[in-house]
Length: 394
Image 1: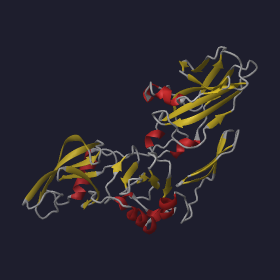
Image 2: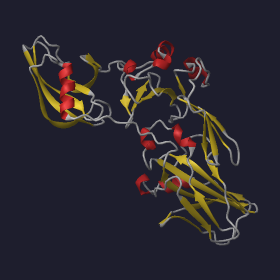
Image 3: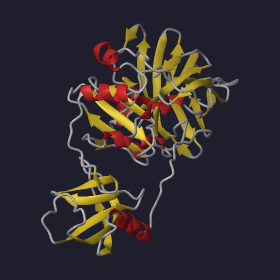
Image 4: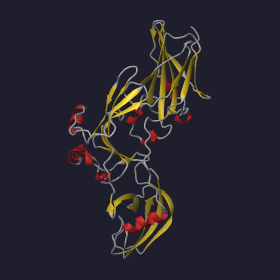
């Protein structure tokens, strides 16, 4: 067998690679996926970070292949494919020698399918590259994995408040308070599992005629602790052994109701596109976002969950996805504001009940490799121009 070594390099960084045979001398190999093999022996933080626009040089040191196909896939942390779609194929030009090519990383539109805001942070995407080489009827596959960037960067503005501004928020909730005293900073949690929120802590002294917080009653005067988050200025009270968020003056938002499929149907039919996070304040959910609100509501049927994302508590949400989690993933979903909930639950198919809203940009061009068309809040419809055309409707 001839030399089958390659080298993969970006700048001064040597990128580790693995190789597995697919077909050789009439034998077909059933083997572990290259990406899963790589990620079984490394962590995400150990992967090299290569930004879009930077170059990767691939050199084949042995016999020149008859054909080479290079495809980029978006991966989970274990190396498995994150989305059930074809990868993005790069044009390959190994020049006169047939042994060296330069890949210039281009934005991969599939990264925009993620509902996890952490994926939109620098280096938040795991990209796996498959290099399939053929020599006659023989075929092998090389693979390497890097960290990269999402095609779109979502950096929502995060409002921060000062101690004085936080004190004003507390005073607005308790206008008749005898005193509002700042007592230091503390990280509290109001979600399950716990997700610490950095807060300013205050001690509030109120007369008996003023409304008291949850868990405090029958007092001539009350002295109790409240908190205001340093980001967004969210107001919290403490009662019955736990912290809870208020969404308006003296309006308790402690969630007590487990969401059912009937609740999902009612939300879809009665509220639809006007849905806000505030409409869901009574349902028990888990905050899974970072930088934007992303709440996950486990539905009584274990095969479904409602995933809702928003940049603002009181404005219409960015999406409201009923997800079929039966296979353990989050790729099979509808936006309940626009699609028929009953048909999705019964058949798994998607049927519009309301027209999708028009967006300002209907066509966005990504250099020579792809065109994105008809971007809507519900998802994306796009096509790759080269070498083949693929359509994805979410």
